[in-house]
Length: 500
Image 1 (cartoon, rainbow, N blue to C red):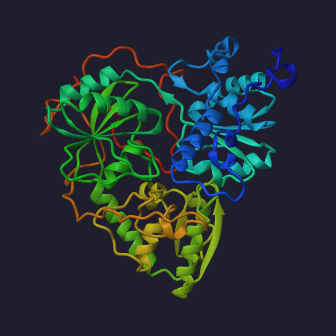
Image 2: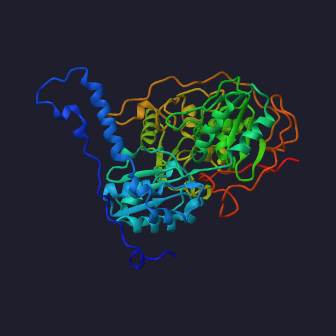
Image 3: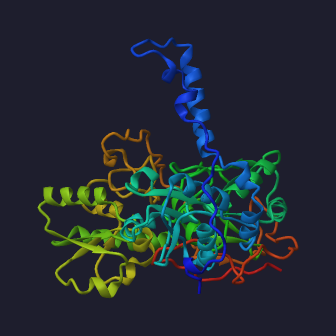
């Protein structure tokens, strides 16, 4: 158990004395006489000055980066996990925060007390660890943080899915927790298994995106490498509900990470492209399969049943920012226009037994995690649709030949997705662009979900065998801190194993 703040023997560090100069001092506009016109030549200089001022304001001071006491305290954390301790301390000092809430997935909670102690030692703030379940970037819980009296929230392990300007009254910092891995072994494995000239799409979660970028740079002289981006995500980053569509001439998807949840997302979005997974902890390289036809058939059956429903239930997920009130409003307006009665239900987590308490509801639409319906929809006695599937059932759009995984994509199919232009708040420009909805790609027929032992030959690869590996990166529990997974996650029918 962590000691209370009053029992800490460490002296509190004073706030940074050397602050950067204010932005106005570097801006020609601030020095111009009132009412005077600025010539065009001054505009680039003004923009450069503002950019320099912003960099100075956000740059961590060298004295903090080289602070021996802070470096010693941060040494209690694993060296290959980048918790960005100096940046966190600097941002808290800058904000003058008094109470800092720390939110992280369960795989990182083992480090929460150490980070909280560091924050209380080197800033004037009190640290509070939020222990509720955190499945993903959609679970940013600024509401609870504010209810606890926090004025600063640090969210670990996920990308900036929820804009920091959306958390009004609460300053926020995202820490991706970049994890260093043995990139050389990963590269050796790919070169061993894929012939030169093959077209590879490299993807991962936010923890390994930097490793993906480094690997892509090394592979480009020999391979046609793509690091796809589905904005607003980072290049190479995928979510369980959001993945890019790839060119059909892509030979293979290579996912760097443990588990299958995120990989299944890009497999669903690209059913005609073979998918492979490299686990950086076990250093096992395996080909992965997904039961596309079974999933599509189950979802179409649920849509057909829901289309005949009289009373609908709309579930708004309340686990952090998982639910979108704007999508809820859109669905409400569509049901009203069609004369369909509906009931609203707010739930943090969705269980079959909970929904059975509403016998009068004939079909459900959950605005929480699309994968809950895709992975576990058959476990519910009534149809449990995603917003996209509800749009199909209500006749707003036709069933797509390739199931769209665009829930948080800027260029999405319609207003049943979180970042669609029609749902943007006033003052925020709508996202423009046309979503890529390709014709039906060739199905991966006859495959079942799970993992194929890597002994077989592949059209673009020699036998899938990983080179001999050294010890995996640091893992206190013997396995990787798993990326958060919404309820409904499943690992698959078979577990990967080292090929012989």
